[in-house]
Image (cartoon, rainbow, N blue to C red; front, side, top):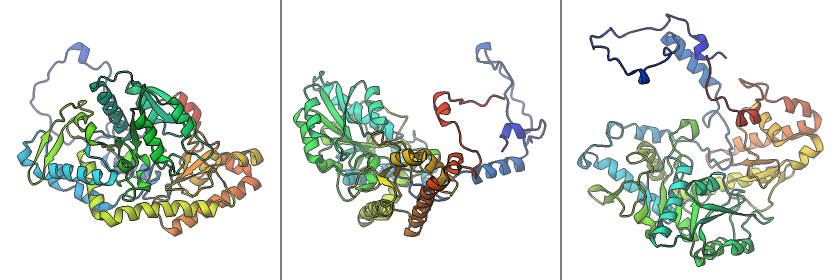
Length: 475
């Protein structure tokens, strides 16, 4: 398929605006272009067809099964978009007087109340724009808390080896030293190793529960207690909240800080369909440090700045329309629907795991929560077929691959998260495809090595693309 620049024909573009009499302003040389602005010239019809063609070559949740582990790629209800598109939400300006946007402030406050109830926190700021952004904000809360108390020796954040890659990155960006601890064979935190590394220099622990291998750590209360007894704080990575929302609360597990992915758990568009939103919540003793402006009030609402705020993480009040969509989802499901969604997510994951356990090696044998991890290490030794090969084979069957090679503690890992929005028929179809690919691995491995063959582009050099990215098309 040609790029839009390659389809461009000089003079084909249509100018519909007449020249105006506004005098030309001469810019300083330093601010002037050195080369002419290069834009494609096509008719409106050609442009429309080009982007429609691109749309047909993409795959999203609306196209088919999207079991991307640890990402919760669930269906986004259309009502979210309809509510967020109301003029009272779209035709506003962030600098309007508070009296003119009372409904919008009520949305922010209601969303905060709902998230506090779901997570067990006391306050939530909507400012962070994504999950990792929320992580960074939460770590800055931990840092501000210790520094405000004059406890400057707490410079270390403990992170299990099964953590999301953003965890150690966020901790490092916040100025902490990262202490990694290995997991037990069952995928859970090694309590003895945790006890060995906590101390007076411990600022906190970063953890998600269920963890990144899809298991609920049976020792979670002991884990958070160990950190608290050492004077540290517990940070909950909200990436896996979809498995427990409405059933158990991180705040009740002993966590002090949390970020929530509205663009995952609460069904607002994810990835390229963004923008995202990663609200950060905390217990009352940390609330004074929350970023940005917060909303107060019950019948009339107003902004206030937390007394010891860490400052702005983003301009104004976060990605407001994402909050509108998430609140629509929470209010639509209600107190009974939210835990039901989690139960169905766990049911779907365990159903797939059970159906595949007789042919694929499961990294952990225990019942999973919302996702499970398969190891293709033995299959690769027997046939040469890797996790990457199976993933590429799924593309030829109109299924988005699971997360590949994560978590890092599982060799040749495929992490599957079916989410609650998929039907049994969809799961059965995916299971049959995975079994067929396994058979093909033994009978015609070379065909899988060549997959995908039906997609717009064939197998790419992903390693070279990651190490030597070309982020600009040169024309």
